[in-house]
Structure formats: C-alpha cells, structure tokens
Length: 164
Image (cartoon, rainbow, N blue to C red; front, side):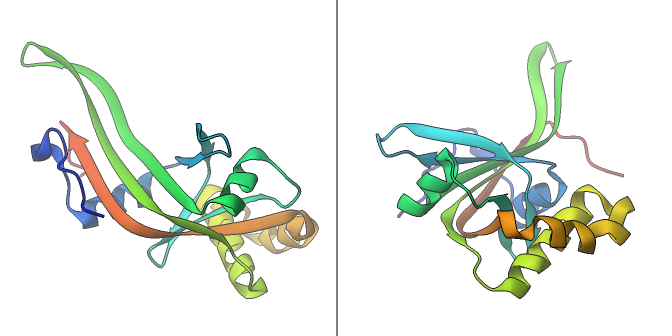
C-alpha cells in the first residue's frame, strides 16, 4: 500500500526519530475496527523492544482482544512533549508523535511472554525490579502478551523543543 503524503510534510520526522518518540512515550492508543466496522481505540501501556511493540492484556475476554483475534490490523499512535503555545502571533502546539500501522499477534512462547513482561515492568516501575519475578508468577496465568509487527512507522513533530 502506498503511503499518503502527510499534510504539513515539513513536520514529518525520520523513521529513527519516530522510533525515538515511541521509546519516550508513556502510553499509546491502539485502534482496531470492530465487528460492525466501527473504529475502536484504547489507551495502553506498551514497550518497544527489538523494533516491535509489546502490550499486555487479560486473557479472559474483552472488546480489544476480540478485535485483535478477528482482524489483526492495528493502528498505534503515541504523543510526547505536548505543550500549547503562543508563538509568532500564532496559537499552536508543540508535540512529537509517532504513528504505526501493523498487525498484532498473541505471543505464544513462554520465554518471550516473560521477556516482554519484564521489559514492561522495567519501563514503568524500575524501582521495583526486585519484585518483578514474583509479580509475573502471581499474574501470568491471567495475562496475555501481544506483539505488533510494524508495517509503517511515521512521525510528525511541531515546534518541538530539542532535548538537552
């Protein structure tokens, strides 16, 4: 599929910068299409590992898991450094965003599930790294891990301040 030209193409980032935005982002929104053809987006914690995005869910049931199983196509958006500003007589925003399209699949291998869960825990609660093993053991029976294989990775940034 041919990528569309981005409106405000001068704000498009390199793929590497888009991946950097994904590394920085605290959360993302994963969007699917439900069985009725309606869009469904849900905010999720995630980790970028080996160029792929990993998320965890319950293994019981739910709207997003039903969508993941029925149609693996997903769209992911993450945003960082959002700040409203008035600059050069113009009201606007500073931001960095990354958009990913791809396919999501349930991670089957136990070692890969555990590796992703450790990476998620280290991203969000590194100060509790000594508790990760026990937490995984207590919760793994009720947990699924999903991986998104990116087909496209694009970024867009506007008036974003350079990090020191």
